[in-house]
Length: 131
Image (cartoon, rainbow, N blue to C red; front, side, top):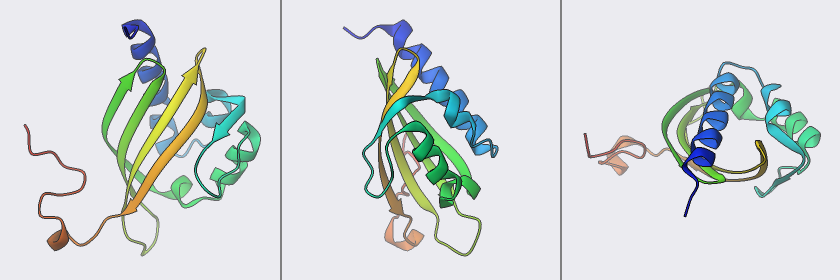
């Protein structure tokens, strides 16, 4: 059975970190990630310092991030958001999966997809049909 206290603590920690990061505070990652942080996305480095140094120069650091939903279950927190790069690039739908250990992020996975023209997705990529 999932510990609801652990779930809520992890949800709150990741949500607060996301909010700070979205404001442009990339260094917040140094307080959230374990030193031995493991990254599962191709081309992104593992290790807290290497990952943060990489993210500082990645498109996500300068993008507008619009959070759509957060799903938390025990040590896992999933975030679904719209990333709007600062340029002429197409918006991107992102799902981040974070695994936490003892109050710090231990692992990360993501799924990143360019948002197609609205005619190709009549139900929207990030919206919900329920109220």
